[in-house]
Image (cartoon, rainbow, N blue to C red; front, side):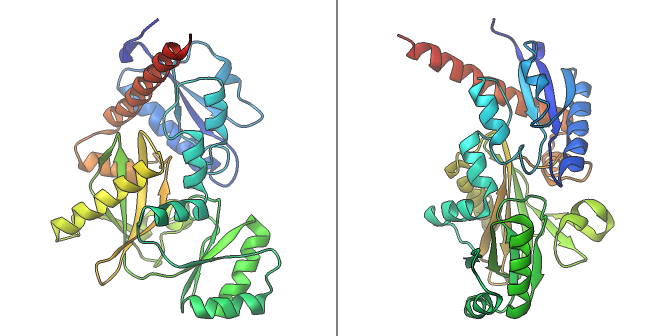
Length: 323
């Protein structure tokens, strides 16, 4: 039966596993409250790989994903939803896997001619001395990143090749695959995207010098979020266009956020793309949407509507292919 959006029952999926579980629960609660305020029929469900009972509920029309990190953002849950032919918000499984992996996404950015930082992948057999020698040729300041973690988990910034090599090997032993990037100094910017529209640019200024997990969630007062800091409208539009190019070329949909560093020479470098941005009380995507005049209830409704519209189109195409 074809349903109008106002008749849909929405399940907000939150929780998941790993270091971002608590943040996901906060995002899920915010989305649930917003949809409830908008008049939707909505339930909030904690989901993990060991408890996916909510997916068996035939009364649910749209699954609104509020998960972060492993299981929720890496394409695993998306693949399960696709296999069951269920309607869900956000990017599909293949593009989610690419976006979540910092190496795969960096390769995708490179192939679409988007500027990226130089990097080196840490190998299992790397010795600290060999790695340090390679790093000395790469840069003078470094960022160590796990390949598959979100919310800046595990990221370290150091300005010595020997220390960077030691931290990289430590990162590899803790998180598995990791990379070392050249550190690029400049303004930290982010561009939210909702339904193929770029939102106002936010500049992030952290008193700690780096927008890490603690700056995002543990010490809100340590970070400023500023709009309209780019005086050149052409540059601002260029960065928004780059964000949309990144979003589209990776095959993302419905919502996302692209992070940049803008150098003193006014060159924007893409850092990464987030396919399931946070929805906590101080998260960047809803903050940018509010700046554009879209409050949280309308924002969540628009995302759910887009997912339902795409799903109906997919179902229609599937039926037309049946002989």
